Length: 232
Image 1 (cartoon, rainbow, N blue to C red):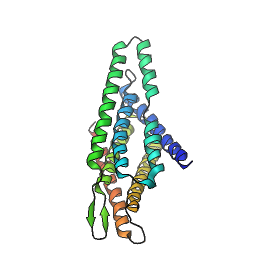
Image 2: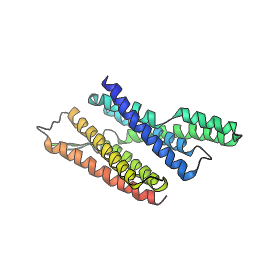
Image 3: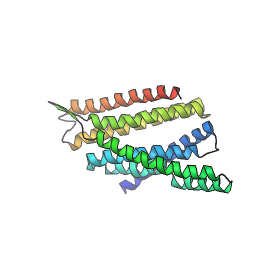
Image 4: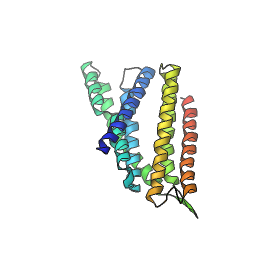
């Protein structure tokens, strides 16, 4: 039952983010081609490959619900095969055969390539730690978190610039998105340390360094994503 709630929570977040992202991209580039659906499917495919590899290699049993929320709920709701199929049929019905073929070809090739790249990145980033007398610092896990943070900063900045969203809604989206990501990614770092024999009672410094390091790194990379978005 806990996994069902985790999937429901992750799915609701993924569906909302997909709606905001695809709507913003369509407002920016127009609806002459399914840019929004293509973008969310490619980004979702990359994240699925990256996070699947990273989560499976780390094998943390305490995060079973957490994995379900991300891989099944969030990524599953963020990507959409049904909308891709519907938009392709609409293009065919409207006589845009070339666009329909292009949509199918680009979507399949780009999504497969994105998954493969995500898996390779996950292999490179998983398992690396820095050890010292009183603990370890899981830098590879934090690097995976920062990659997600960069994409969030980049996507959020582009959408806020291009989509007609009121300032109060922009502020709410930023606070909710950034706060949720920092909390969940920090929790994953703590669970990783707990699984490797560390505890708050005897390894307080190591736990705090891991959580603070992840928070600082994610905030810094989100800021870099915001700067990169200004160049688009």
